[in-house]
Each structure stands twice: as C-alpha cells, then as structure tokens.
Image (cartoon, rainbow, N blue to C red):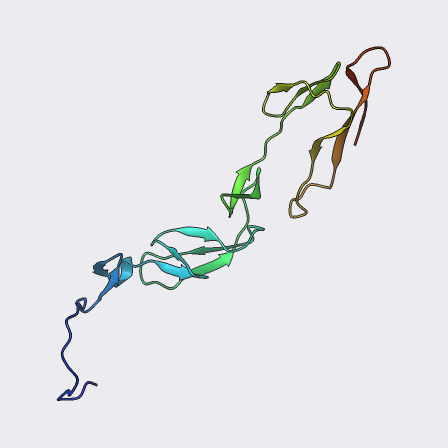
Amino acid sequence: MAPVTCSLPCVEGCVCDSGHLLYNDRCVPSQQCGCWHNGQHYPVGSEFWTDDSCSSKCRCPTQGSKLQCFNASCPAGQYCGVQNGKPVCLEHSYGICHVHGDPHYKTFDKVTHNFMGNCTYTLAKVCSNTTSLPYFNVEAKNERSSTSLTTLLTSATA
C-alpha cells in the first residue's frame, strides 16, 4: 500500500490501465501478452519444441501467460530435424546420387559435376548421432588413369 504523502519529487511516466500490460510499446489486455521460455518470447497461441529430439512441446495459451508443456513426438512419416537453429518435424524423403565414368557425379540435388581429383570423395554419410538412422558413410575413390591424364572412379565403399 502506498503512503498517504510522498516526499520524493514527481516524475513523468506512463501506466497501463488495470488488466492491461505494456507489450511492444502498447498497453494490451494481459491475456494477449504471450509467454517467455528460456529468454525467448512466444506469441499467444504458438507452439514450440523445447528440445532437439522433438520429445517435449510447449504451447502459449490464449488465456494468461503460463506455458502449457507436454510430451510429444513428430507424426508418423516425419522425423525431428533442425531448421534455422530450431527443432522441427520434417517429411522423410530420399534422393539418388549417381557416380559413373571418368568420373561424373550427379548429386542429390540433381547437379552434375566432374570431379577429377586423385582422392576419395564422401558421397553420403550420417552427420549427427541424434537421428534415428544407423551410422553409414559412402565414399568414392578416384585414381589417376595409367593411360591418360584423367582420373577414373576405381571403387566405392560403404
């Protein structure tokens, strides 16, 4: 409770009406303010994953600002991945990579390259141990041809 008299100097300021809070420089009804989680703001009605394995999700409810968190997982046919630094559910998909000749590489994005290096190239591999895929690594080895100045694909290993 405030004292009846105040000896401090008066200062100019702004105060929101009762039931309203300052949000983005405006006074809005308190149920429209959104939620905070780990220093990040989420608007009312939004949902977000709380971990990189998509096993826990939170929702910022339409009434009040207390988060509602629950166990969850990606729907069937989808897997948990990361896009723009945030966990998301992504569709399972596949791609085809072709390697042939002296040596021609057609990558998963359907672009053709002629890699002439005398070395081993990684064609595909699992880069993270947080996926449900078993670890694999597919490599192609180019070696210098004994009859010309080019290189040839000599082996592919998985």
